[in-house]
Amino acid sequence: MTDGQFQPIAECGVTTQAHAADYHRQWLVANDSGQWLNRELCPRLAEVSVELRLGYLVLKAPGMLRMDIPLDVIEDDDSVRYSMLVGEQTIDVVDEGELAAAWISNFVQVPCRIMKVHPDTPVSAWPA
Image: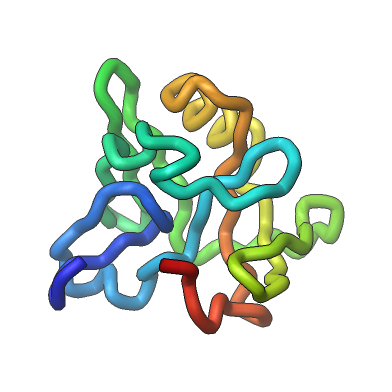
């Protein structure tokens, strides 16, 4: 990635929208085992385009209807909060729900979920 490009969902498409800087890598995709999926493990993630519009993270992918996820909502229900490993760091994530999980799973053809990085435990260094 170059300056001025932001990736709201780690390993998915980039956007050049300036206000996306605040949301750079605030989401990730994890499989059912809680493993973070990168493009090496799941190459189709690169085909998911993202943009920010009217308070939503808007996802688009070939052959799919768009998926809108609220930008600034953190669920306070502990039943959807999990810990997972990204590189060497354990972080807390919040599951974005069944609809988002079905959307990403249908597109990449792997059972997985979209998770939001909890603001209490941001990723200090993403693996290369």
